[in-house]
Length: 308
Ligand code: GLN
Image (tube, rainbow, N blue to C red; front, side):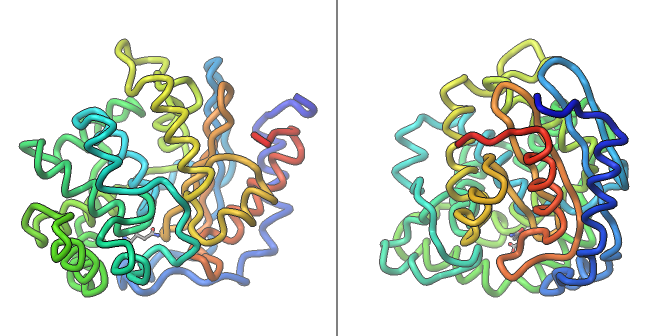
């Protein structure tokens, strides 16, 4: 490490980045998300060797939104074979906004990757097909991963999204028309919106995602969450598709596998070392946290980390 991480160093990065607040826009297409104060700023880091650091509003829970797409893929990997998953969803970046329908028709209902809405909806359709209680299962996994028993869904956010679900419903129905969606659309949408409405803090997210930095193993859980190869694959997908149409720009600036959500959270992985969670609700034009990405950029420069 070029610089040693400690809480003061993280606090000084947040102070450097804070002037950016005001330049982005809190997501308002989900009305319940528009209520969140744009002023929040947080970072937390969990390391493979058992350390934990944080600064700012790192204990405050927020809607993790598309960060949940990584967790639903991981659950699908536990219940479906590699072939079963990857014949229904691709592994390539889309270069399009997360809720785009554009490529779906051209590509016969097969989404480009599991981290755009279409891909995550296919993954949720798979979970509905093999799990008796997909929403409960997700809560159990997340609670176990971060060792916190009271993590739950923000039902106000989930309901708000269901009431404004025309676009996600259109995506699901288009895939159904191509035979790539097998269960009841409304049921699967409800599961997907609940996953997006998981409420977690940066401290909890950094702990929950540590298994991706640690070859698929959470240090406090006896059995592996996924295999080392699967962890590598998930990180590769995060690196290529985790930040939507800004994946290239993000690779340039930060250089880590990462996944963002429109709640303003971003989780990034330094393989073999640490999981990092940042939060700032104002977004850039691609729907990624504007100040959150800047925090990751400053941090990776300071500690001299990149996978490239
Ligand atoms: N729930 C949001 C949606 O489906 C998730 C989008 C995101 O976080 N990028 O539109």
